[in-house]
Every structure is written in C-alpha cells, then in structure tokens.
Amino acid sequence: MVKLEDPGLTTPSDKMLVRAVLAGDKAAYGKLYDRYAPMIRAVCYDTTGNLANAQDLAQDVFMRAYMNLDQLRSQDRFGKWLIGITRRRCQEWLRWNLRLKDNPIELSDVQIAVPDSHEDDRIELLRKMIATLPEKERLALHTFYLQGKSADNARRIMGLSRSGYYRVLERARKRLKQLMCRELEAIR
Amino acid sequence: MKTPLENDLSEAYEAFTQDHDYLRQKFVDSLPHRSKLNKQISRTSYVLSFLRSTVLRNGATKIATAAVIIIAIGLGTVLLDNSVSSAYAIAQTIKALENVTTVHVIGTDWDGNRYEAWNKINPETGKSEWVCIDQTPHGYKIASRPDGSCVWDENGNVVRYSNKPIASNDFRYSQVFDQIAEKMVELNENEKITIRTEKDSVYDKPLVVIHVVTNIQDYKIYVDTESKLPVRLYFDRADNMKQIARTVDEIYYNEPLPEGMFDFEVPAEWYRDWNLLNDPSKGLSIGDLTNEQGAIKTAREYWQAVIENDWDYADQLRPVADWKTDYHVERPAELIDIGRPHPERGCSGLVTPCIVRFADGKTQKIELVINYRQIAGNASCIIVATWGWPVILSD
Image (cartoon, rainbow over all chains, first blue to last red; front, side, top):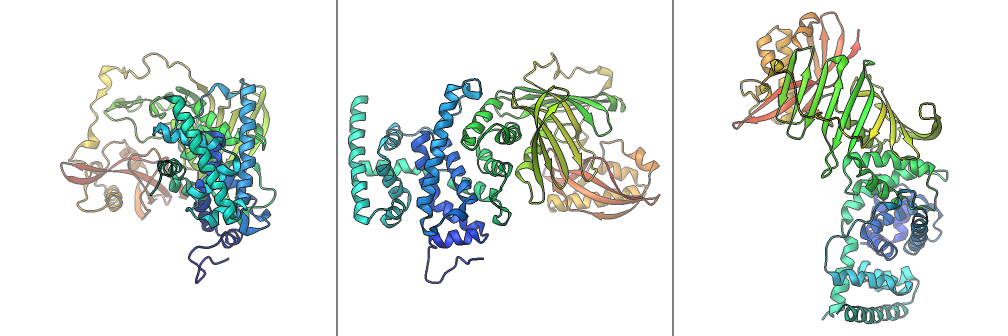
C-alpha cells in the first residue's frame, strides 16, 4: 500500500494519489474526486445544459476512470486524462440524445430534465454563455474557478505555459463579457 | 476589487460544488475494490456501480428507485451498449416509473397459499401508502391507508382497527420492492448478480432474468423487455425465515383499484376496539433505559413469565396475540440467549432475537417485535408481534 502521508508535502500530488489508488486505496480516489469533480461537472454541463444530468455524467466519468486507471500512462497527468474521458462521455451522451430524438418509440416522450433550482436568471445565463465559448476558453474558466484559482494546476491540466494560460483566460473573460452584454441588451 | 463579472462567475461556478459531499460519499461507497477488478469486468458490475453512485441520489422515491434498479440493470445489460448514456436512460426510466399509480400482485406465500395484494402509490411521495392484502387461506384480509388500518382475522373472529397504517406485519408486498433495492445496492463481495435472457413459457416472449444471490436471500426478477417493468419475482431465503412472499407470479401496473377496496366495510358484530398497544397498564416500564436495553429487559421478563406460567404478567407484556395457546401446548423451558435488538425494514419496533429451548428438547430462534412507547412521560416497552416464523435450530 502506498502511503499518502509524505513528510514535507501537505497536498499529495495526482501521481501519488493515482499510485495509492492502484495499490488499493479507495480513499485516495476520493481525494482525486474532491480535486476534479466540480470541474468535470462544469465540463459536462457545457454539453447537457442541466445540472442534474451533468452530475450524473460526472459520476460516470469518475467510475470509468477508476475502472481504467491502470491504463493511465503518465500518472501526473490524471486531470488531463480525465478531461479526455469526459469529452468522449459527453459525445456519447449527445449521440444517445440524438438517437432518442430520432426514435420516439422508446421512453423519449418522458421529460427527464430535472429543473435546476431557482436562481438568478443572470447567473444561469452566464453559465449558458460559458457553454458557447470555444472549448479552450471554457476549460480555462472551469479550471481557474474550480481548481482553487491556482494557475499552476489549471495550466498543467490544459497543457499550457503560465503566460499562455493567462492569455486564454483573459480572452475567455473578454468574450464572455461581450456575449453577456449582447444577450442582456437583447433581453431589454 | 472584483468586477461584477468576476462576482457573477464565482457565483455561477458555485453550482458545480453543490451536493459535492453527498455525491462523493455515494460515489466512494460504490467503488469496487481494485483487487476485484480485471480487464474483463462485467457490464453488470459496471452498471451496478454506476447505479449505486448515481441513481440513489436522485429524488426518486423508494419504490420507483427500486424498480429502476431492477429494470436498469436489465436494460443496461441487454439493451444498452457502451455508446449509450446510462445516466440518461435511467433518468428516463425513473420518470417513467413515477407514472405507476397502482401495483396489483398475485403470488404464493411461504405456506404455498395464494395471496393477492394491491398497492396504491401516493403521487406526492411515490410510496405505496395504500395496501390491501387478501390472504383468504390464512383467514386474513388487511387494508391499510395513511389514516388507519383494518385487519380482518377470520379465524380469530376479530376485526382490528387502528388509527395508524399497518407498520409491521408479514404481508406488506410493497416491501418486496424496497428489499430488492436494498439488497442490490448493498451487495457484498461474495454476493452476485447474474443476468440472462430467456424465452418465457407464460408470456411466450423473451424476458430478462436477473438473479441476485445474497447471503440471506436469492431473488429472481423477470423483466419484460418491452415494458421495462418486472413481471415476476421469486424469493428463496437461505436461513429459512418464512417471511413475506415466496413468489410474485403476476404483477399488473396502473390497474384501476376495485371500488371500495379501502372503505373498511366489515360486519358490525365483528368490531372490536383496538387500543391495547396504547394501554398504559400494558407493557413494561423501563425508566431511563435505552430503547435497546428496554427491549432486552422486556424480552427476558416475558420469557421468564412464560416459563414460570405467570400468564397474567406475560399477557401484560405481550397483550395482542393469541400466542398463549401455542405455549400451553409447546412449553418453553429455558431462555438460552437474547440477541441484539435491531430495526428491520417495515417493522414498527426493534426485532429482538431470542433463543429458547422447549420442554421437548427443541431449540428455536424466535424474534420478538418490541415497540418503545412514551405515554404521559413514562417510557415503556411492549411486545407487539413476532418477526416471521420461529426457526428450529435443533431437534
């Protein structure tokens, strides 16, 4: 069993956690879940546009990752690998969605989207607008706001340099601001 | 200073941390141990793990959730391929099952007798709150609704009314669904689920057969691949505890209820007021003892009274059943042990296992259901029933 307690390190690295999971430590996977689940939910939300479905998809992503963890070659790139799984899972979800729309004989007439809790329309609109950004910019925002606002973590997940990451982030904010202004004007 | 957009972004992202602890707990609990994993991991266990981690957090009610689990496992294996979002399919199934308003079942109980039961689902809670059971061979007809219940015991020539729904008896078939769900989500490592498709002779069409083997009980659930609903259920208890049904041979969904089913119309001459369980002169005062300690004390004093032929005291502790006749014939001689009182699903009190040796040398395990009461500030315990049939441990 790999021990997580490493003197001098307050936060175990992804690599340490992955090795601990592979050695049978389920709690270590819980730590990876804590680290990445909010971001994975955000990525799923970009596809589903619904929080409940995004939560379900994210659970499935983590389960798949767990089942296939021994296939992860660079253990320190767990986050990036996880995003790859999420991307594929979201594509599957979209395909299934389309198939259901084409074939209404199955349970397709059932309304499945659970309405998200009532919140400020502006905030919901903002989330929808984020989902329309280019993938790189979306990911920059997700990682920044859900990875403890640490540029190092975020850029590692995205495979960018520090300055490159900030450029993408800035571009995302700018575009988002424009989109929001346009959308709010249209509403008015 | 933060810009308004910055503030909004922080708020927008908070949604993705919502319910995190709960989701995490469910997820981690559902993870199989890695030593059990291999490349050939079956879709069954994958689907099961997925269900454990996602479905149970859904707002679906128990009966719906249970049925979803049954069906989704069948669907997940037979109808879904890897490219299909099980989350989406399951969410749809949950919604579909929320449309079930009544469940009508016909089956066989542990004595080989037929029974018939109706469950009406409360659309608000999704629970089977209206239950009507016909156990004619045993002389029982039971009707329970949220505001009260009525048990017509033909053999005892008595009708028992209560202002509470039936909380504890062996005949609540709605429990079947809950039990299956409970077993399925709590499957241990040495328990298993196998799934196959077979052509059914009764329905003359393929059914998905889900075979659940647990330490205590085996279940076989037959699911219709067209309607996605269970059409038949079989149970086999390894410990020979005779409870609930042995088979549910026919299940009908959304049938209109027979008129007047819950009207409690019984012959007036068979009416008897039923308030013994709330009678403060009955039961055993337990002072500051905990519920569990009180149950043990009550069980011990009850058996002592029965062994010493103190029928009045035994009757005070257990006033409701016609058990005395049995013990006059088959005499308890020694209380060997009392196990830990524990709750059981569908049981109003603590189930307290008692090992008793009888005068003929037989040893039996008899589980007493002991309720805890607070009447006018006084805590007391009262024996309300036995949980299942006695199990003979040695002849």
